[in-house]
Each structure stands twice: as structure tokens, then as C-alpha cells.
Length: 451
Image 1 (cartoon, rainbow, N blue to C red):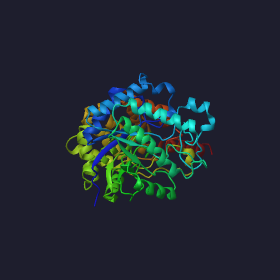
Image 2: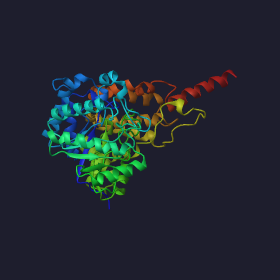
Image 3: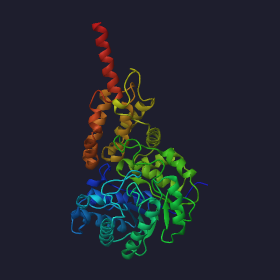
Image 4: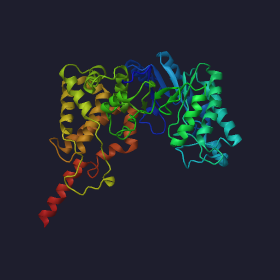
């Protein structure tokens, strides 16, 4: 039986790899909260602070950083959304770790990030708990607290082995501290990222832990409701982490719901940018009714969020369902040995033509960033096919129009594209397949003429 979860959320977890969300002000955050609420979400998850990537001044309630995180929490509450907090287990500020280098965690077997310390160092753990208390006291409300064992967090030193056993013991301390300030908060544990043997250890520990309310993804079968958090696929990373606009994967999302069992009580797609918008919508739509078709969901997105009515909504739905193919922009990772080698995507140009024609018939799309995200993806997919009906100059011009639209409508995303270097690559003849192919043909013609 397809899963129909009891609660549906979106995790807007902007951190070091986000695609522009870290640069949002409060007004933009409020707008995004209103969007996910209208799409059907009842819970908002965020990472108020990643200590290892911030500085000591940021934890002060009067700091601009913390004031914004507090106001984001209040805005979610005002939007009638429950608030979930994603928090690393054992990171501290880099200044403190620099002064106590012997506290550093061993990352040999776990996925760690900045600022992690070994919990067996007494001073280190005191600092970890001090920072968590400051955070819990500062935030106005927490409905759910999710602390993963790794990715990010953990320590693989011999004193912490096996880490699975240490994780639950340490999380329990933080859970008690959180409930001192937020007594009704539920606790969400996980064995995500751990070796299989340690997953079984967490399963045994969670089964006996009356302070744990839910688990994320794994371990299953331990008497706790399962929250699908990381999703399958991972909607924020798929397709280059937003560097090519939207990457719709509606069919994969639909299969996920139809494969899940009754243990799943909550769906929380992990998202780090507006490029996920269509997939977030699909996650929430299929959670309400997993028997819908991909074209039906895509057409509703076109009508509701792009303002496209009539037959054009169906045309754009076809584009959405057709997008999402793999794209390789870096020719050094796939040497161009065959002049005809390129990305096999026979309908790529047609999708671009449809999007251009729909924009002409619906001028309001010029002010709709969702349109430009999808069009940008369509253009880039076409640029990675060696030949087609559209010339490289037309496609490159459309890519530039997309960037200009992002600069007007979503400047933080435009800045991300430029900072990541992905858009500059479109301007280089020797990077994108179609412009490479045209340039290579020119070189061959010159070679033959001179020979």
C-alpha cells in the first residue's frame, strides 16, 4: 500500500553548500515559508546554527545572525507551521577548537565537518553542552529536534568506539537539555551514515529509549515512527546542486512513495535552495495522493505556481517530466574523443522551443522565477547535446536571459551561479558539448582545407 504520511514538512537546511538561501533576509524567508505552507507542508525544519562554520559572536541573541534565526522561527510559528531543528551533535566554534587542538574529533570512519570535537575530552563536551543550552534558550519554540550520528557529527577515536553506543548516550543528554526549555519537543534519532553493524546497535538502543520519539530513515523495526528525511532521491543534490536550475525527478519521487511501508509517519524533503521547488511540490503532492500521475502533478504545478492555464499547462507539464537527465559540464571528466559524442537527449531542443513559445504567449512568466529555473535546465540540457534544431548562439542567449531574470527575481540564486562558476562555463566554447562540437568541426574544416 502506498504511504500516506501523517505529517508533511520541508527541511530548508541552508548551510555551507546552499544555493543562495544563506543570503536571504527575513522577508525572503517569510515568502518561502508561505510557499511551502501553500504547497501542503505542516512542518518547517531548519538548521539555526552550525557552530563549526560560525563564530563566537553569532550565538549572542543581539547578533544579526541569531536575531534572524529567531525571527525565522517566529515566522514559521506565525505561518502555523511546526518547527523542526536540525543540529550537529558535537561541533563547537572554530576559535575555541583552535585553542584546544587536542579536542579535535577523529574523522577516520565518519562523515564529519568543521568544528567537531571528541566528547571524551571533558572540556570539549562541556563546551558542546554550553553552546546547545544557549541555543535552546534563545529559540522561541522547538517541536522536533533531530540530531544525526554523523554527516555531520561524530568521533571515530578508540575512546568513542563503537560510536553508535556513544551517540545515543550523548544525544540523550542534549534531549534532556532541550526539554528543559521546550518540554513538549519530540526527539528524532537516526543511524544514518553508520556501518551496518552499528545500525543494529542503534536499533537496539532506540527500542529501549523512551525519550526517542521518531527515527530518520533508519533504523527500521525498532518501534518508532519513521521520518523520510534524506529522501531517495536526494532532491537538493541531484543534478548538480542547483547549478543547472531545476532538476525535476517526479517519477523517482512517485516510486519512493509507492515503495514505502506503513512505518513512515512523516515526509521531510531535504532542500537547500529554490532549485528544488518543483520537487518539493511533488514530494508534498504525492504524500497527499501517491496514486497521482507525474503529468497530473506537473500540470498542477504549472497552473498553480506558474500561472499557466489551458493546453500550455499540459505542454509545460511534459517539459517538467522530460527534464532531469544527467548533465556533464566538465569536459575534463569526460574527454571529447568522438566528434559525435554528446549527451543523448533527443527531445532537448523541443523542450526549449516549448518553453520559449509559452513565455511569448504568457508574458507574466518573465516575472516568475519558477519558469526561469525550468527553462535554464532545459537550455543547459540542450547545450549538452552535440547537435539539434537550435543553434549554440540561440541557446547561449537564452542562458544569459535566464541569468538576467535570476538577477531581477532571485538575486541570491544568481549570485550562487556566478560564485560557483557554473554559469561562466556556459560562456566558454570548450566546456559545453554543443559549442565544443561546433568549434571542433570548425577546427577540422580548417585542418582539411590546409591539408
